[in-house]
Amino acid sequence: MSTISQELASFAHGLDLKAIPKEVVEKIKLHLLDTLGICLVSSKMDFAEVMYKTAAELGDGQDSTVIGLGKKLPMVSAALVNGTLAHGIDFDDTHIGAILHVSATIAVAGLTVGEGKSASGTQLIEALAVGMETSARLGLAAEGGFNVRGMHQTGMCTPFGACLTAGKLLQLSKPALENSLGVCGTMASGILQIESSWLKRINPGWAAHSGIISASLGHHGFIGPREVFEGVHGFYKAHLGDGREFSWGLIRDDLGKKWETLNIAIKPYPACHYIHAFIDCAKFLREHHGIKAQDIEHIECKASEQIVSLVLEPKDRKVRPTNPYEAQFSTQYLVASMLSKGYVNVDTVYFEPLDDPEILSLADKIAWVPDPESDFPANLPGEVRIVLNDGREFSKRERFNRGGPRNPISKDEIVDKFMDNACRTVPSSQAQEIAKLIDNLEECKDVGQLVNLCARAT
Image (cartoon, rainbow, N blue to C red; front, side, top):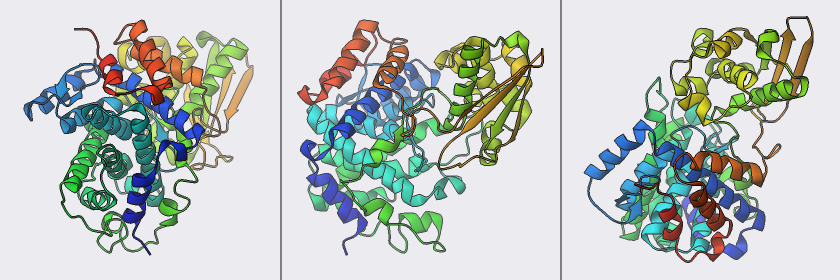
């Protein structure tokens, strides 16, 4: 039997636009649009300037553009910065089953190499399809094991997808792609000791950086191990141990026929996916019952017990977050924000004060109880019950988090999200040009045309 890396290399080498279902192509384009909007917002943040200055010190180059800033760097350095921007505000897409942020790494790797090599829009779509699909499958095979061990599953699995994305654009042979994957096995990394640090933001940037370097090494003839995934000292066994059976079929079965790319969820809110159903419940109750913050006596959230330590406890830190990252992982704060303001967006966690008295008072009224109906982690349900001062009660349950395959958001909603994000950095007319170009990406002769639009005026 051929090795997994051989099969992935064959898939990457042979895939062309005609073999990609139209619904997959359209989804890839929407994920690219979504990612660029997030990069543009992030380019205004303090960590963006730090990343750019660091990357610029590594060496000059004119290959690829830093999104938002419009400055040129060598491909690998631009990928490092852009991948960090793409995950910088935790608003990027997620494959729930694989526990993986996909496009923050893959879209960045594709754009960065695509610009450097003057690739066409069709070539970019093909490369993104390869990287997104393989990343998701590699994450599924881990069955959550990396996160359990304190490693960031995104940082561990998406370097391989980035490697194939870059290799596809560099037009590597199948043996070179296989060697590149082997090399990539020693570069994949990322931990989750986050605290109040910027650490998690850099993992997709490093993944894109590592994937491009691995592809370049394979291109120039560096030899990698053939059994990088399934070997006795391979990627999975080295990190997750020998005492378990790995489902290799999750990687190789129906490759190119069944598309896990369709299961990647686009976030409607800049928050942990576990909280989205609760925010939507709060939105529904506020809008359909005319509930006002001052009329609320008590709020109850029915929650899957597995998510409590991440998004509901400890209560004092969740009720009164001290920085944007804590707010993004606080059910109490975000439910209270929706009930108070009627929206949760980038402003909620990054540009508005985190000590609004009405929001904090509401957050303090929220308690959680176990959810006996939860089917977590297959789905990410949420339920909110509100008791008013006059004794009336209202409740709402969402079985499936919005944005995922069982409760998708529309193309119009994704475009609206992009415009809201992008227009914080570039003029509306410029953002509309970006959206139009991506919508017709197959007709684009050089993706540098797209990247050039993704820079604010100096």
